[in-house]
Length: 583
Image (cartoon, rainbow, N blue to C red; front, side, top):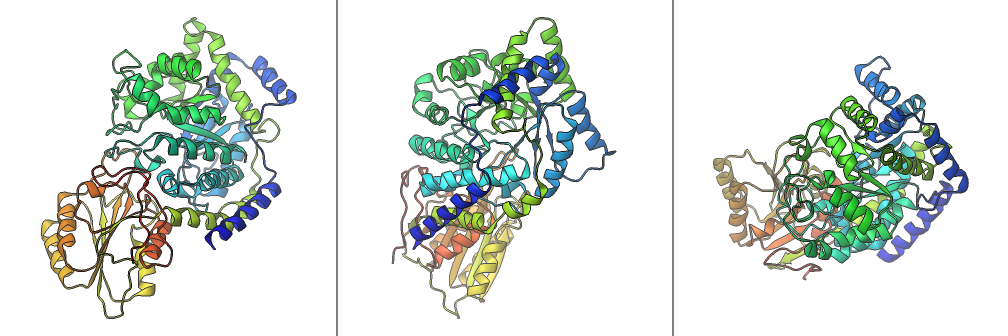
């Protein structure tokens, strides 16, 4: 039945993409497109060429044309000739309308980028929310990875987004990694490579440029480069075995762009404290020359402290360009970066040919996207494409197939709740603030109450007192069944993936009780390493409402557990482990 449903969805999506005039952006440029690139490049001034290499960011909300924010955007486009803009979250129609206004200001079409790691719905309200990479890794399915890229491309292009900064090809082999973690397909090099290639094909065969990140690999660090400069001390042999193969695979798949990592690798770049983003040895020597990559190289955001704490905006910009970057992403100050680059070229410190090589790649990308023929978004098509029911069905299939039953020592699953049983529903948050997709646990709670009304609900977070935790222990003794849901968010500038000692103590206590106790983890999957006593352990690799609903359905036996670990749980379970229900 499940296979039949996937076949039906596949047939529907094939019909949809033909109706939407599918555009394969991985194909070589036609002679006419190539002529546009060369003619445009010849006619550009030095200032226009330099500006193409800068992509600042904006929040796509309605802006009055006289507002300070829109005037700043207008100045960046008209005076500094920026090559594009990065769009953070908002409403799809508001985004598209603003992009059309911006495109009218630009002499050369703007390249619009976005981070669509959780599908377009993670950033834009009403669009389809897809599971992130580790959940896809748990499915092991190239088909689902392809569909994730395809759906993201179809909806993203409908809103005016040309480049998706995805997939993450970092191999997450450090359980303490606070910033890559569930954004990676997993710990297995072959799995990351295989699903990364499938996602890239799905995106680029449907009109959106994919970006492999974070080169040459950000998986083996316990630091967040948004907060500091991580240092990875492994040598070239280890990089060849672990970090580099997914990027080689992406290049073979024709990935359009690669994003750099703000990490220091002293065995590759001898200058102390110089991150990969600013390293000629890494960007030109390794990526361009050895790996043969000919597409766009984006820096990661230059406002991140892994760069900004160590280099001025001018120095960071110049060093990135000298290293081989084509695009300076989120320059701290557009005018300062623009001026520094112009002066460096005028003084002969950076050859004009170096600038033109990057601009040619940017123009080629815009030509592949067809922006020289039509740069505008059709607002009337958005409501028929973005967030459509069939895309939502694919999204549900993806997260349902990801749910992983790691352990069920007492064989309590599938859980059968009797009317008189009192259920303690415990929601454990690693942080009270920062949840962007509604209150964590709300969807699980609502679905549970539809099926069973005798529920006692408690939520704790990092500020919960020891006294309150002791009260919860007593309450647990009065209940018949305990469902505990842990939420551990992986996010920029957060820097931690830990529960508090009080929360861990509570979980250890609950594990000693002789009653059904099911612990489901939403987000970072590694809590078992600090609470090995947990008798039933379920992973979702995500924290959004549909993941909560899918987890409850699996717990109650309404859908099967099919996920397999895409990472190892050190000292406990290997990659590929995963149970079906045990009774």
